[in-house]
Length: 480
Image 1: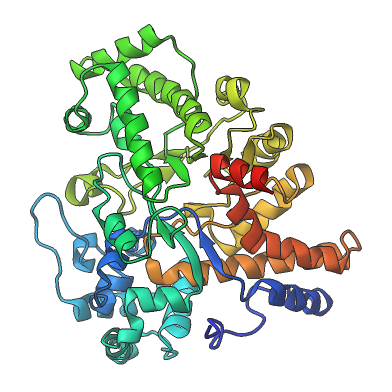
Image 2: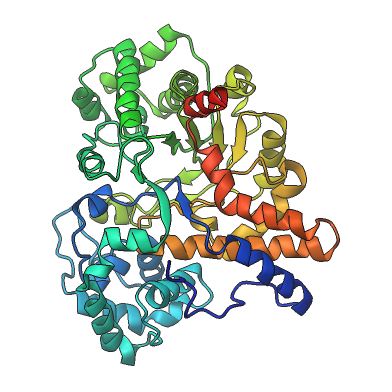
């Protein structure tokens, strides 16, 4: 494997203090070249199924990256000027070079941000472009990138190999026909145990408040709540056949609720007639998390919960460009009381595993770490989205390790749509963990050999173990 750090200072993100930095350098070597496990993300599987050349540099690096477009939007540069597609039929910029020049002219806005770190690392490490990005170098950088994109060695599957990706999980709705995954499996890339697998994400059929909910229920072909549950079980089996090892749930809150079947059915019917309100929607979402936990006990899918985002907070942005373009905002989230109904039912069941994420850092020490330390079914997911940054990753380790340790965490997830940023994001996490562990060694709180084992666990072994389907894991353990 070609090193992804060729153009990066060897000490990037490592501690500034020389003694601790020397330890971190040594620890980083134990994780640097381990294969990448990407168990949660949003890369379009068609990219790998079709294996076509990437589009122009702007459509690869700028247009789909809402981290980039939202920063520029905050300074008055409208998303349509950056080529972000519209849903209202209004025109958008289509010339890649024009979009790229606009980014370069405003590159100073990204000083000190993770977006700058990731983008510059992608340019240098993935594409070998080390020319500093500025207004006067925009065309040169664009042309160098375009030249690389014409090279077969920079097609998606070739890059997958070079990134040393062992497994990549994508995320699909229950309504997906999983065509791309079928093609990947036919090519020897997908299916159970494959290199590209799917993840079951049912939010769009569970959330009454998601526009078009009733139409999607019609697509599922159900008219009653019992039919709805059975259809979801069937779809989970189809996802498992396409390699899925986990489900993913992005609810507004962490609320869980065990309703009676009759009460849940009444809410479902109320929504079908268009009479459900926000309270009904929250109660139904909360109940469905318990139902999905029950399904996980049955089929072994690891459950992931990503609460705490106020979706489409920027209503003007949503109206013009739709979802997932940078209009979501984090909100405070409570877990201890919210999760109790679910954990009362399944928190100590060896057949169940739930990975908890948060956008609310105030709960790491107070709620999440104690929950992971108190229930064998609970693991802590890596910081994500607004927190998947060097400082966010450091704060995570500092706030959860004392109570939850390392073994109750699930390793790093890149949670990205930007395929080319995957190795960069993982390398950032490995460097940050090397620095954290080096401090423990320097303070004589952890022997060097155990720190070396730990960084390998965090980078590779933990995510591989935590995200394995519990049914398959139990079968494997029984065979030994």
